Amino acid sequence: MSGKRAVLLDRDGTILDQDGYLGDPAGVRLLPGAAAALKALAAAGWERIVVSNQSGVARGLFTVEQYARVEEAVRAALRGEGADLEAVYVCHHLPGAPDLRWSVACDCRKPRPGLLLRAAAERGIDLARSVLVGDAARDIEAGRAAGAAASVLVRTGKGRATERLLAGDAAPDAVLDSLADLPAWLAVRFRPATG
Image (cartoon, rainbow, N blue to C red):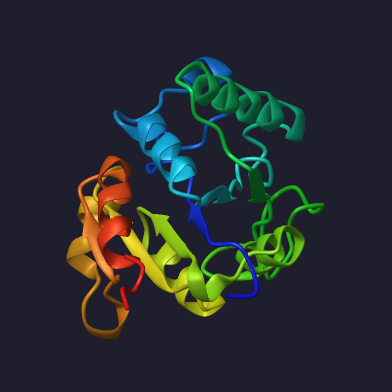
């Protein structure tokens, strides 16, 4: 137990009721129960860290500054419901993107584990005690590649369609209806051992 435990969360479709490219703060809508879940996770001692692909910048759909305004609106919406995040890690890269500054084959774009590994290194997170939560196959793959204790698929966002595609070795460790169900699942899965 060398580091802290964390829940590493995809943003769009997991925390936000959004499944496209969000460049306007007015479009920020939290999924039902998301803020309450994050608040419960904090009370249970879990760090809450977003790890998110945001290639809208590379695609020329919005600027880094517009992305930053959206991210601040997300934080404000969460704080308005008594919740918050410890950190946000984002990848704006997209190989072959029209904006050559972002056309990079990086290690941070999920399903690669770079964002999770960076978060772990910078925040003292023990990935072997941490959980990745998202609505896409790339989230599950990134959690596995980073060595997370569990990778959880939520049925919000792309999750319901993704669930039908994941089987065998690609299957997540758990499938939940939404982020709202995560605190109860974690309480059972990571129950302290009794002597």
